[in-house]
Amino acid sequence: MARLFPALCRFPDRMAVRFGSSGLTYGELAAAATDLSCRIAGARRVAVWATSSPQTVVGVVAALLAGVPAVPLNPKSGEKELGHILADSAPTYLLAAPSVELPGVLKDLSRIDIALGGAPAAAVTEPEDDEAAALIVYTSGTTGPPKGAVLPRRAVAATLDGLAEVWQWTADDVLVHGLPLFHVHGLVLGVLGPLRRGGTVRHLGRFTTEGVADELSSGATMLFGVPTMYHRIAEVLPADPQLAKALTGARLLVSGSAALPLHDHERITAVTGRRVIERYGMTETLMSTSVHPDAPSAPGTVGHHLPGVEVRLVDDAGTALVGDGPDHVGEIQVRGPNLFTEYLNRPDATAEAFTAEGWFRTGDMAVHDNDGSIRIVGRRATDLIKSGGYKIGAGEIENALLEHPAVREAAVTGELDVDLGQRVVAWIVPTDAQAPPSTEELAAHVAERLAPHKRPRVVRVIAAMPRNDMGKIMKRVLHG
Image (cartoon, rainbow, N blue to C red; front, side, top):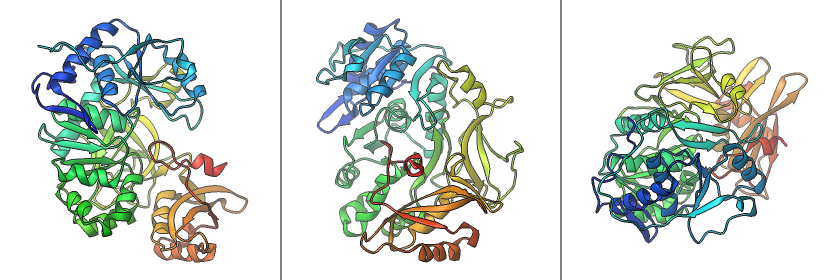
């Protein structure tokens, strides 16, 4: 399992990565990454300024070839966050494209410019220790400073091989996406995934529906995206026959990083006849579950566990929910080769994250669908609402709200209530800002579709949802 790139020297003339008009064949990538790996060999760690560019790919692959943990940096991060990450990870070098101007907080690091040239590599060597750190990816820091999740080579390989088995992912596949490369979705799945298989990734640079249509119409077979991207696709799809034809011809459409609303599932399927596959994972677990493309599943579920991965739901007492249906909400716990090893420099947080039996506590809440697959209802901290003795998942209420024609976007939170414990609060972006729906109208709409105790007691109208770089709604901002 230790070799992450068995295909790196197998197809020297095949396109490995392309960003617009700039691309690298496997031979060019092997040459550039091998040269750089020699320069950074023996380093403690290297930070990679993770722009959407071929240089980022070369930098990360070089680090993995050298056996040096790579720390991807979000170019949009503020100096305070960057300062914390650098102090915590203490990289020996900073790898960046030659033309990039870096913020002042990085000035004391030894910089190495990433070159795209190099002598042809006849062979590529890699470390043999499966437990050696491959990447240190910093979490979003919603409850404090970001924590560095140490991902071993074993976890990267296990996740990519598990997805390959379920998705029948091969060297013949060409993946298109516009995801950032500082996160596991865009970097591990979206770049290392194709490279491990020997396939090709075409990066859009900036996501556009026109770009998706062009790439899928010219040989791409797979599309990765986040719900925001698929929402934009669903919005324009009825009036865009080229996009509809391109999506219909794709082998696999995958959404991740957050739940895709049912309304968008239905709109895409209605036009293309294709369904969007969802999978479930997080920084610490990489991927844990996926819908199987050939198996029937309800929209909004994230499928069953990947090969070699154990997944269970537990109640507040830690008892596993086995055979319990959609009315029983539990926390997702994961165990398997896909897990991270630790939070860097945080033994306390690492110990708290695991049970005595080695299960990782994800903090995500879910139910078992009727076929036993998993349906996410939200985060324990922000999406599980305890109201009037009921446990209510925010996700199902959000989906119900999105079915109302006057609601463009929706988020649901809970707030303190002296009678109920918590009341359900709906935050909406209306379709028509001049005529937003009333609280009474939306409460009745939800109560008809779900149950009366799940209706919003308060509706707050806002102009736009606060989102992070992955398109997730930042509910802590709404709470604030």
